[in-house]
Image (cartoon, rainbow, N blue to C red; front, side):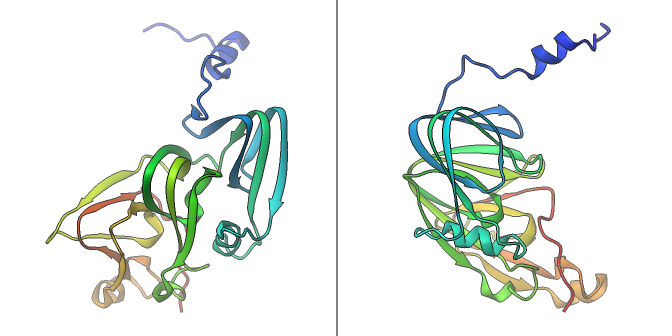
Length: 232
């Protein structure tokens, strides 16, 4: 086995940004999103900017007319966080607590994403906030979701590598609400309460509440519970 050289030059070679890649949205590292702005504007999760190069202006919004500002503000444990506009020309680097980044290019399509997992989106993407009210008292901060639709890039985040589960007629999929990242447009989740299982493992356990997906589509689940459940 060849011995690895832990030199400064090795660090530079392994960690340096790749100047040859200039896609609008691209993965610079598994947990680092690079956005190449050319007199363009995007929206990103406030606080996700870790670096930028060039002439980029930032504008923090507490409430956006399209609604995503309100989504992030409400979804992040009531801390008043918001979305951020970034516009201009240059390279923008975004990250969120070391979570892995997944880039999706919608082509006149739509998906639903857990509000806390939205990292960035093109200004051309439409959005609509929704909330599963039936779990508002079960999950700290509630459970917010956003419908992203249209044509353009979006970036979402996951703790670890997610798994995509297919939903078919007669074969529903049940997920932990706090581990559920995204799902296809044609699925409408409902909440299933498993009283027996909840009583067995404790009143405060999240597994007593599940999201149930019925129909034809897919669900993206991460190996992590995003928000802690609170006992009522």
